[in-house]
Image (cartoon, rainbow, N blue to C red; front, side):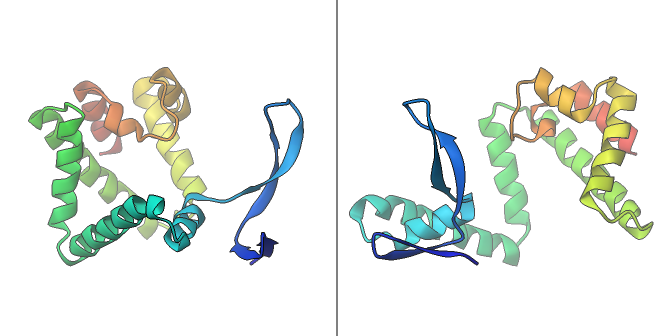
Length: 166
């Protein structure tokens, strides 16, 4: 763990990357991942940080409730998909597809497929067989960056994915 003094304050888990500034030059800049940034926000003694702190507490509490009652997580997923404008049929297909995916990955684990990279390779092979596209190509086609591809599939794409994984 790296500690760095910044204006008489200690910052943990920050790294420096050369980032381009407005003047076009590259400068060493402190960067951190989302988890570290959220921890920093928690420590900021400012009224402006309070809404984020309240949100973090709310999300943490919701996650604790979901751990005690996993059905709440399923309900939350349904609500998100409904907010995305998804039909009840699409949501049912998406959830069924996830169950099939879970059975497939459990099978892989039981048969010594352990690495995330191996899961990605196998997933890509299955995906390419039904769609003639790699997962990356399919995400690019849909202009997705970090979003879950399945959450942006049509009903037919979900069915084909589930059938291929089954």
